[in-house]
Image 1 (cartoon, rainbow, N blue to C red):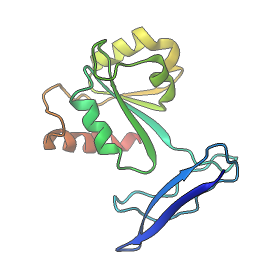
Image 2 (tube, rainbow, N blue to C red):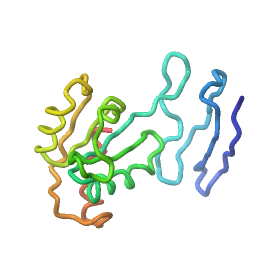
Image 3 (tube, rainbow, N blue to C red):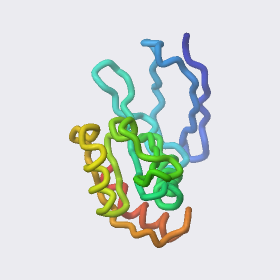
Image 4 (cartoon, rainbow, N blue to C red):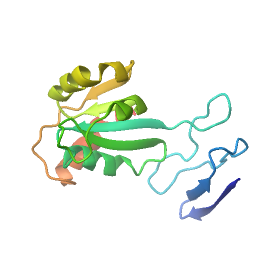
Length: 159
């Protein structure tokens, strides 16, 4: 068991890295520092055992067709977080589950109505998880530039 991967230097002394590794390998550790080509730090915080900690972010809208998948795609470029998206409606592309709620460190909801649904259906799974309402109405198409700008303006302060 072990790791294999590569680190390459990009223009401006930034780094790009990709690794495959076994999570069961207790000796595995990445020591890459610098900025990637998205301007994000490669060196994530470590816990007391020296394992890297990535915040787990869940974006929630109603149908998981426009707003939350856009947010997932926009923020998936960051190296310091893991992102998923889901919808509160039972017929959503990726319906919200107790497992997704329990997985998340921060849940971004698009509208206040999503908070009510989240608390009603998944109160036991929330367990103190931070829920942030972005107040983004269902007025946008998938990856619409205006939606991307709104997401980039509102969400980063909470990450």
